[in-house]
Image (cartoon, rainbow, N blue to C red; front, side):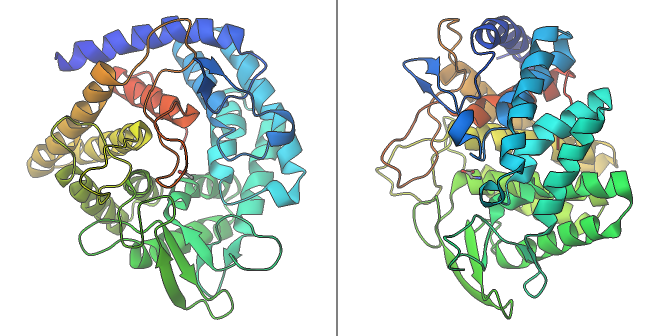
Length: 379
Ligand code: GLY
């Protein structure tokens, strides 16, 4: 497949389809589709962690096309999230996923004071989840019994850019310090010798000492949940881009090298690289997220010497392989169907697998935008 043409072709298909899809879903915040129709997570499901990706898709499309419809829908998504900001029990570590693609994107484009305010409130809440003894941002919530007070998850690497943004805006070093301390803890306790990553690491929330690891959304303890590997790959790359700290780039490369060495021949990614050999379950989101991270590593290396340029080609070519495998086998271009990416999986042990998930579409679009020079940098 022609490397440049496929991405241009995909970009044109995305623009055509999404204008129709956005028009008939303008008041929804979708998570998945049922019979090809988006559901809606506004209202009493507003605290769900994925509720920023629809807005993110809208801002990427607005950036690329200038069409007002997208800006209006993105703003509606952003305003609906205010109900989440006012619900302490509905706030969690995933503030970056919700407010970077909505309020912060809006602020970056329009300079809106309301959007800045929302981004800062979310960043402050996230900073408040920092455990100073263990030097980590705690994941999720519990029933107030503290049972998860010592839990951290690899996904949180993708939320750190909200703190880097708050630091850049305010020059208050606490945001940067918390982000960097969390990234250093993640590097030490999540990333294994072979470049694979744990999903959950538990610390003693009082002393901060390491306690245990859990398989989380992957197959089992010690396994290799592919979306977690992708969050680590892209997340450490972003920490490198925001801080210039080479050790984060080296960690991102080590995770990337592990990911690359486990990609199946057909380029389609399983839910867990260590799931049983007879299990064929896939997760297309892991593929799209990893591709975004690989393209950013490649871009960073391309700006260096000849040797790095050679190295960068491995990452860029792998991203192309992942994305063309999705494009040829896992994309729905029917205008009557709301989603794009198929065979996405939230967690290995869930009852349902291989459906559409909004962040799969988001990261696929982001990757295609990166390849066609249309990206609004969200993270
Ligand atoms: N952040 C949760 C997930 O990736 O499913």
